[in-house]
Image (cartoon, rainbow, N blue to C red; front, top):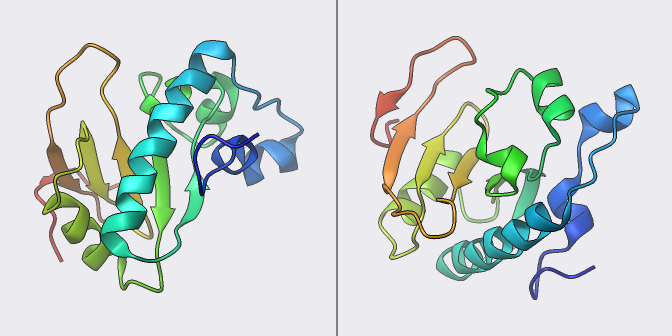
Amino acid sequence: MKLSEHFTLEEMCVSQVAARRGLDNTPGPVEVENLKRTAAAMEQVRAVLSKPIQVDSGYRSPLVNASVGGVSTSAHCKGLACDFICPEFGTTYDVALAVMESEIEYDQLILEYGWVHIGLAQEGLLSRREALTKRSPWAAYESGIRT
């Protein structure tokens, strides 16, 4: 099922952890609607970068999210987040900086240790446009996008 021109539901629900552990990662109707919004935001990211994007993680069921060590309040569980890379554009730092400097509406943008995370606010809530850097799984979040 296509969520947008370049993103499918299958792509936004792919999970190596779910596949390895035999976990169901099927979103419900509310999450699918949220994934449509996330895919629309990712289309904007793709337009800013002018390159194809590789989705590493989109929707995560609560069980899959717990299996990867995600927090229970993760936007991934609502279908409102995407972790991605765009090697043809540049480093994850380059990608995060380009998104941060764009007009794309996001709630959180996180330069993580190997990918970029973009999270959207729930429908009707104001987006914070919070930009953070997390250098490792154990590191604290730092304000801003940092090298």
